[in-house]
Length: 436
Figure 1 (cartoon, rainbow, N blue to C red):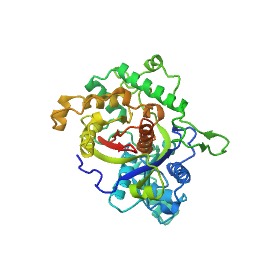
Figure 2 (spheres, helix red, strand yellow; figure 1 turned 90 degrees about the vertical axis):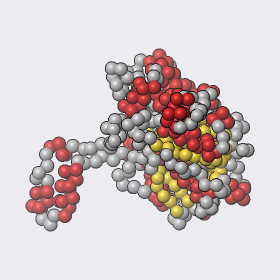
Figure 3 (tube, helix red, strand yellow; figure 1 turned 90 degrees about the horizontal axis):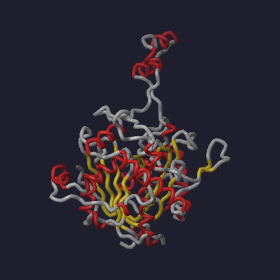
Figure 4 (cartoon, rainbow, N blue to C red; figure 1 turned 60 degrees about the vertical axis):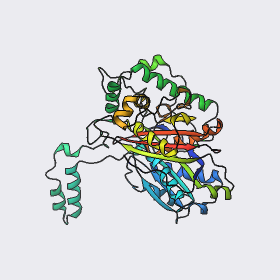
């Protein structure tokens, strides 16, 4: 387990945030790359913030699904936006926790005094996922590129078999276990006794709360409008995955996906493949005052943790959250809000179960007492990834902004965010409200 946490020093204030609508892969954003989406949201965020572009001195951005043509999304966004080209930028990848990573990178640089005004975020376009070729074909192409004659170029391909010509999609399985994320979640559901009914109930709640947040205007300030290419005659203004008409009966009618005979995980109680981008502006506390900016809240503490992928792949939050809360000097009971990434309903329910388990605390964490129970009225109060969607690199930034906005509405003091990620990694972030 990593021991890193925010370095004590200047407080990093989150002063603004923004995201694109989150849309199903292959939909409105199918002609936009992750870099395109990231540049759109960063440009709009800068314009809305009123902060002069020359004040920014850092950008940290990430993506999870590799782009075929742009591997350094952080630097590419600087070059495609109103930011000065001198802005230092880097690219990060921590699977589903990617924009938690970029946010804590920015917070640490602010705390250390290296930077004062930073942008952090992430984007992913599943629609633009790279399709690879087999190793034999790749080797043949490389050999052909070095050939000096047409005959030699033809010879490079002579040994290929028909199967070598088939396209290779991006890997979806854990390299160390051979299991997909969904198969691992199914195992967790079975091992932890998580029922289909409980999973569907959480999914229904996610859709209901997300739909209500949209209906009451909560998301209006959080989500920008995007003109849809290539004709730009339509505008994507809302997430297109949220189902205001979701019912428990409809969810119960869906068939299991990963274990068709005995499984409980369906398309309805899982997060869908999604395109989108999200970004935050983080500023040193004293710099925010000098610029006349009103913080939405502050980064107080964080932790990352990891376990063996052969155990419970998506249980990382249950390991990271206690450490983050310890570093914050707070308890779960101090949290006015808890926002847990909903990769799968089974994963959320498994982590909540671990939070309240004395046995888990003693055997897995070496702690005498469990973290505690989460009040359902404080959990994912405006919905989560099952309903809103999950563009891998963007989800963390979406959660931070969404949670801080709600914390402000409730005049709350503290919030906990958790994210599970591939490789059996977990992230936890403790936020303070603007008055804390």
